[in-house]
Image (cartoon, rainbow, N blue to C red):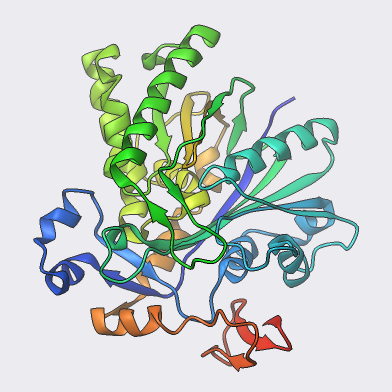
Length: 386
């Protein structure tokens, strides 16, 4: 029985910052951003958006009444949680009009939690093949104005429906994974911005990928030529290239060209949005499915998920018949195309307008006639949505 991703949807806020403009404002050469780390734009989050609204909006774009009737579990992966007790999945369940008789849970392990949620969903559907699970990976990468990490900010959400007989891809049972206590990135509960050692994080990412690739080969007997492409966790697009370059010599020259081309395809959306934390690797997967021109049903893709702190997993997926018919490329391209470009001054103002103080009743700048879910503000210490 095949279990995997039946549907996938994406959402990011309607504001975007051009990183060339940011480079000029910060006194940097634009190529440091556009070539050095491989980013062109990043999402800007208004104060009426948070991980709940983004996750709901991503899911809303793909769910049907049939999905809602069959979903009895919502797994919400985020490292940008909005409450230390109440799950973001509970808010999402209500806003999406999902059945009351459901499990709702929030997961956290830096950027890795979306993958754990996906694996849990696969295992659940294996036992209950008539049911479906909604997995949401939603985050806001926030490092602070004029900080070294500012250029690797971003925001958005990926929503995935996991089901038997999936239309897009099957998740194979060949995962290898590892965890290690590393101080490369963390965010204490009393801080709004993360603490990060960028160089250490890059080194650990590359080392864990190489270690898991070698372990995966030993366990499965697969070689690099067995894969049509890789989807990497991309806090910035150059990170995937750094990892893949370590093993590229194992492939034939023709395969090296194909893998490099499809790596570029996997980077397209991340280059325009920035870091999604838990959703980043699945935005990379969506980009690969949307922009690669040579993928064929039955082929395997490799997925490398990494979360600082640190935990990583490497596994494969198999493309299903007519998978391209169910990849929302047109919808995703339209979402990105309609975003409003903001100046650096406008971005800084929006950045500083977030409403984090639950002690004070306040209203966001939510738009009255919006068709998307919105965070309205605080009332008696409770978050208000519509």
